[in-house]
Length: 371
Ligand SMILES: [Zn+2]
Image 1 (cartoon, rainbow, N blue to C red):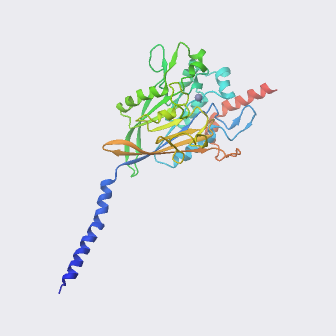
Image 2: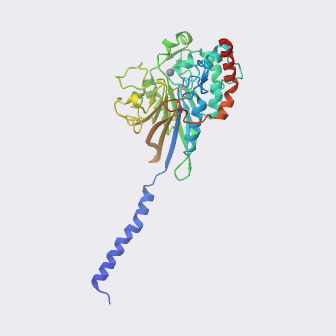
Image 3: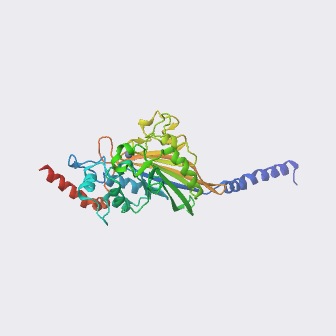
């Protein structure tokens, strides 16, 4: 015989069990959207420091050198499914090797500048042109750039002759990215680049009558919607400019803070100041979260100089109402050496070998001059 109470109890139990057994699964499926993790890697202001060697003191220096940073690049790439590698500019000039290659040896037709040979080997996805790239004149730069297999971009240096950007202003990289479930998706990654307008002061004799600069922020505001209209799902700025929250001026050398306020820019790889972000030097910048490396909610990184650090931004991209949207971004820097100069990484021997000819030649030349 069925008692009324036990029947009700059973009924209640069935109702209680049913939702808890099936509902959460259905809910999870409905809520789950496609999610992609994309890691951005940055070197910046290398100033021709390819080898961990100080040519002034004629000795090894493990605080500098792309051959050291390259090990961090490999490691950071191995940790994730999707990554892109960029350089923030000022890579050709700044040490005796850069001087020797530009002023004594020269870059002859068909020869590849060792900086670009290194970039090609490490498979950089795009590079910024920094203000120091002008120091040896436009002819040298254009010849050297022929050896770069990746797009070299800048949007705010304008040719006087054509009144259009002297370089390719931006690029939209088509990449197949793997989502968290292992499915591949075609994404358009827009990359744009800027440099300080002070180039006309710093490189007057090389640039006067040939190019003129436009303010960084104004240029960005004009191009980001164009890139979006061209299908960019993500927009990354290779901003060869520093970070300050001082009141805005069109000719500011440090425009990053105001770039963060432009809708559509998802991440900023900065440079020029030879500093480190996130890091203590920027503690007082308004709306800055040092833990996540964000300013005004946008992820920013600045990877020191001379190869001292690798900059990393990890983006999470989700499909929202049929469109890809960056929903999260966190930045960090990884150093190649500790405070005492003790290396934290091993030298990338493959890259080291590739750069040996010019390095040996340079050391030999210095030794000859010294005796
Ligand atoms: Zn610079």
